[in-house]
Length: 181
Image (cartoon, rainbow, N blue to C red; front, side, top):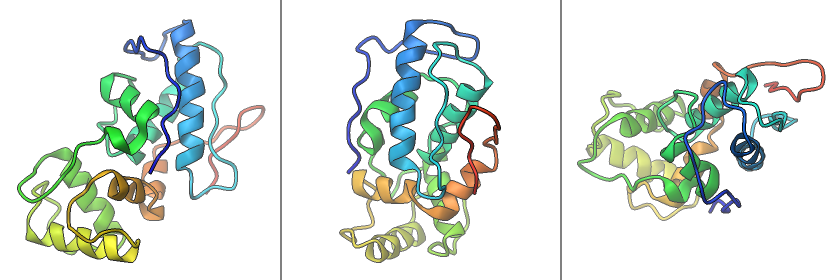
């Protein structure tokens, strides 16, 4: 399970160009969540906590959104705030009959990791259930074919998924820690 991170009670939508104490609080919490999630780099991604929502912060938010199977827009809205603060517990339970972008993202992550051989169509059908079960068995989880908190957490740590998410991430030099795969 992912640990909850202390976050501000007033979670306003934050985006590129914002400059406020709320951005500072989000940056602190984002750094903590990224450290918990990073499984592929020698030096976990950390951003400067400045209170200014700059390009570095936007790219880090996009990276987190990708890892968390959220829509990638670089904006810290309700879903992104929830993931930063509560981790995988904030994600929906997915099972037979579900459909949409989350299912499609999971199918792609499972396909990249050789668990899923079906079409990446965003429909949680029998092939998706079997791929999820195989993934759960491989990761010593209860093999029920349902994506809940523990399965979300394990999926977000898949190396192939993290590498895919990092393709749109960034490399910084100088005083900022960099993402190096």
